Amino acid sequence: MTVTRLHCRSCDTAIEGQFAIGRFERLSPDQLAFVETFIHCEGKINRMEEVLKLSYPTIRARLRDVIRALGHELGPSEETSSLSDESRRKILDDLDQGRITSEQAVQLLRRQGHSG
Image 1 (cartoon, one colour):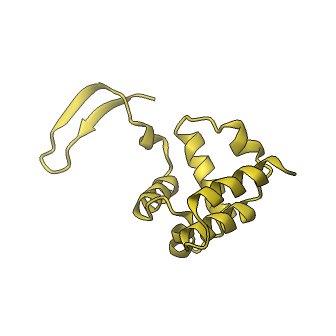
Image 2 (cartoon, helix red, strand yellow):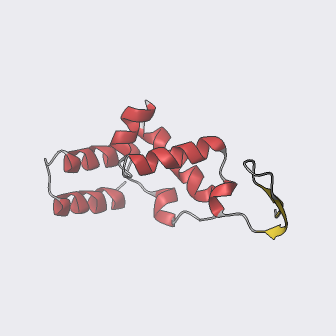
């Protein structure tokens, strides 16, 4: 899709031509609000759970939808990971709360991601 007219509401100026739209223009209003919340929460899904009152798996699913809407493909590990969202969430929550180190989190994520 190509934008052919830009209009300023303040001064009523219009420009016509062919203008490419940015990737974020592909997003629905709900997806754009989700991205804004994601940025506001600094990408921390556990904070998004609190703000949006949604479950971790729901937020992950919406994030994957946004990634696809922006024209990106998910890697094979994202589509077929054997690590459940709940297990991944627990590891990341433990890391966020300081109960485990980043090295331990990486080991747990790798170990559990390859089993199953």
